[in-house]
Amino acid sequence: MPKLVLALIAATTLLAQAPAPERNAERPKLLRAMDLGVPDAPSQSAAAKLIREVAENGRAFADLEELCDGIGPRLTGSEKLREAQRWAMAKLKAYGAVNVHEESYEFGKAWTRGVSRARLLNANGQEIHVAQMAWSPATDGVLKGEVGLLEAKTLEELKALLPALDGKIVVMGRIPSPGKDVKDRMAFYGELMGTMRQAKFKATLMESDKKDDLMNMTGSPAGRMRGGSVPTAFISKEHSELLKRLVARSQKPEVELELGGKYSDAPVRAYNVVADLPGSDKAEEVVLIGGHLDSWDLSTGATDNGTGCVKTMEVLRAMKALKLQPKRTLRVVLFSGEEQGLLGSEAYVKAHAAELDKFQAVLIDDLGSGRIHGWPQMGREDCMPALAAAMAPVNGLGCKDLPAISIPGATDHWPFHQKGVPAFAALQEPLDYFTATHHSQSDSLDHVVKEDLVQGAQVLAVTAWGLLNQAEKLPRKAMGKAAEPTVH
Image 1 (cartoon, one colour):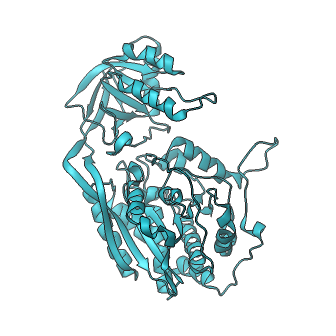
Image 2 (cartoon, rainbow, N blue to C red; image 1 turned 90 degrees about the horizontal axis):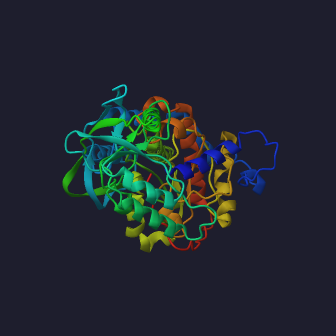
Image 3 (cartoon, rainbow, N blue to C red; image 1 turned 45 degrees about the vertical axis):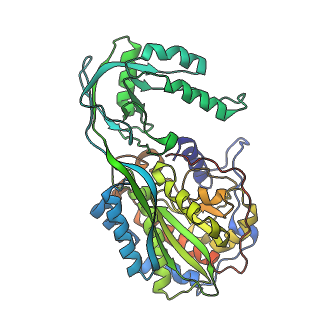
């Protein structure tokens, strides 16, 4: 997810846990279910049965072990993701789902990671830790060059600096951003990107925003989100700072760099996994719950987004095990291409455009392993009484918050939201998601808290059950011009 969106989510996530500030700082308004006068459900309700079933017989953690330790990284376009999709369909069928199938869309060329290495050729001569940006070109062997630093506060300063960086391996520092006085932000970014396209760098090094040698990862074959036009790699924060110090001391650091990622010969198709638990008297209406089965390939994608996927599968399993039939149809969708810019959910929304009016709601789980404490309002105040009622039975599990925020372009709820479907991404306790596991080589099973995974599955199951069975259909709302998907 984009850094700004992550910061917003993290701040809101911590809001309910933090003591009251001494000053009257502006912050998102928190609405809790009990504020709307919604009581908890009776102990013998279907919601209570779902809570017990997930706690006593849940398969989410065991499924996550199979997915992460047995299959591993799942980059969109890779055979590993195809293996994971076959695995997920077999699991969903075994859990009692019907209409289990895949829906495909054009993805672009697949990309496979190769060698990523760098070394200082002068100064202390040490190894530099790098990871090639996905879908950026390889170096065609070992590339050598002097290191330059791009640091600019304004577009004018940026334009003045670029000629001196021609032919260098450039560490990307701070680049200009639109200030409050900039009225046309799109025009600003258009000029910025146009200026950057004129650069003649030999290669680019993007500093990780994490410490302790952890990496970031991004890239896509799609449009403006594809990898850079020159070989590009992420560099650890510590080694980026080393190069910056050498540049500041005029030591003219020189680096050798080798990046070996490869593209497929031809474009490939990507797939979303779809499965249903049919409803009864309102079976034509749908509550969709989902996550994204694709991951980055530096680790096994446990928290981004293995946890979300196994929780949605667990919801269907628990309802079927209890022989519960909802009024509306429960649909599980495990998207792909999310990490490349919401490509799978965009394709799903496009393919099902004629049916979207029949969607009661969309619930997406994609914020790591932490406990779910609520849902963002997404500008849908008209849906808050119904959402509060649906989540009321899990107030006692800590899911109480309905903050007045929107999460734009960050995960697979967004394409649905833009079409007026009530769509919400779960707000979760951050744990180390923002600081460590997100898009890094530490996104592994040992960062998953089993008890929190169970709570998340319980919350998702109960909230979905409430929305599946409410008498009234949630309202549609025109959301204006659709925003472009945001690469993560």
